[in-house]
Amino acid sequence: MNKTPLIDCQNLIFSYQLAENRINQAQKIFGIVVVQRLLCFALYLLGLTRKAIGQSLEIPSETAKSIIKAINRNGLSALEDRRRRFSTFLPKALPELPPITLREKGDNIIVSFGMGNRYLKLSRHQKQDYRVTAEVKAELIQQFAVDVITSGRTSSKTISAVLKKRCDIDLPDRTIRHHVARMGLGKIKRSLPKLVDAVKKTSNDCSKT
Image 1 (cartoon, rainbow, N blue to C red):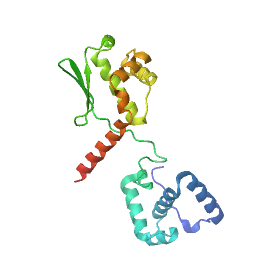
Image 2: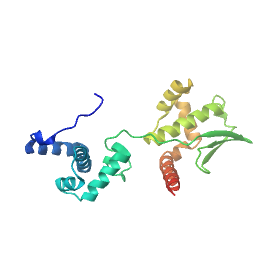
Image 3: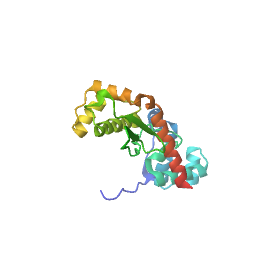
Image 4: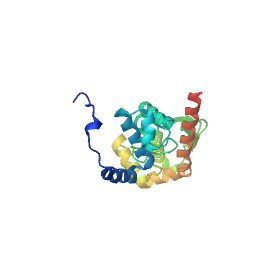
């Protein structure tokens, strides 16, 4: 089917009881706001004027106009309150992660998270580091950051499995826990996601000006 057929609503029979039951069920799943906006856009597609839509849904015609405009511009995301941090029914979008870089400076290794002056300074003379190269540390830190930013949590077991699959690096759970603690990564587990959100918000605000 290349084209959605036009529906002649005047020849259809509507059941008030069925409509009430279905709307109540939908509101339990999606919430009142989402269902109202779905109905608003559906009536718009079926040919009702904005004034008629407003009267049918008992909302101002300007509100109906704003809902229709937002859905046409932003798609499904416009069905929810844009002040929500996460959608209740759309897949959670993964944030764009800042580039993580690694460089040597004297007797230290500097790990930059790509967010201003946020970095870690690691000593090259840690006795237990003889099996873990700077490149492996960089992959460990990067995977730690990815897990914390995208899901708010991580574990040495998860990092070990991902490093094995993605980089073919064999790093035991115990070794990962040692380096996570040694590098102080546990101290940024809660603050890093908030910092990324703040940086993204600042970046978005600057792009709008």
